[in-house]
Length: 410
Image (cartoon, rainbow, N blue to C red; front, side, top):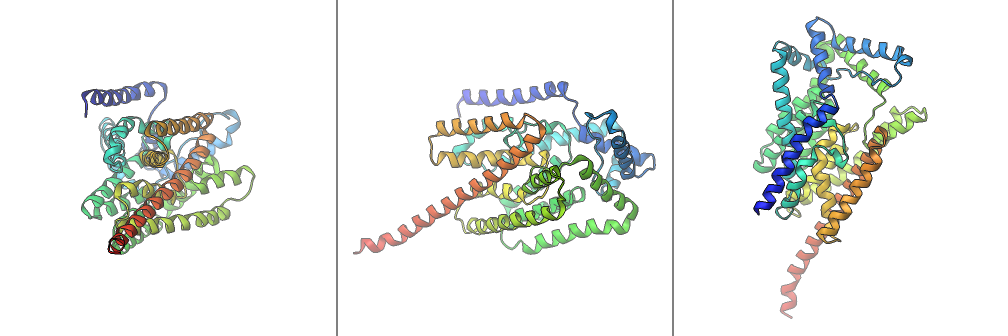
């Protein structure tokens, strides 16, 4: 690797690091972290943080006419099982807990870049090491400032995916399952990530099933342990959807936004649509995983499609949920384009598609979700097609290798 290339790579990382404080100067960071801080203050005052959050939401929307353009207040929407951890954090000096959190957050954000790079093959590494510094600023290949939010999701995804790397490399998945259980205490839908080990290794049905059952039990038992808190927690979630109208950028999320726009009830229709597309996605992933386990293609080829497909099984994908998919999506697009184009032309086409998508998405927040939802589906379909093409090519090569000696003897 030439000194000139190293200088360019280091320069890009320096520019990325310098841009963060400049970005912070233009936009107040940590808005999701402020929600956690507010919940800690409620607990320290002996209050129910969910009841306090609901009171703020209801007061805000009762007087909405006086501040129509003000951002909707965010609420603490993690289940009651997380509150003991908040009490522990609240017992520490705020400067210490805040500093430790941001350091952990930064390490986990960089870890997500590192995990994405595990899918890069040797001949792709030089180009993607140059892309890596920008990846956190373009979640799902679209520009967004979610990296400044401080949302705990980035930490949760980093823990799960670091555990997954341990499983991919050593075949030991217990750390991944433990991380999924911990993550599900904050966000129960993250139990869907049990599909990662299930589709990555053999004999994972039992541990995946036990993890899923344990996560569901941990969620359900909270209604018995803390009935009032749990009831208010569910009401807070309901208010978040009723007031915020943020269903995310998943296919079912986009449908929910569309139905809401036309005043149509979205709950039942959304459930049907989710089943209609989630079952085929899992079926395709399962088929491809069997080919991967039979060594039809490499882990580096399988990993981007696996992650994108599993994340699509989450019915609500928000901006921070897309962060771990940035490099995998770029890899899928790159690999598909270089099949039919020279590397230089592939770079030009890929950059043009991403640039057009960004120009359209940044017009307003609603467009961002629509474009990202389209990107997610297109890149997943493209990745599946690419793997199937790889599988068919390898299969034809095997047939010719088997048949060639027979023709040679004729």
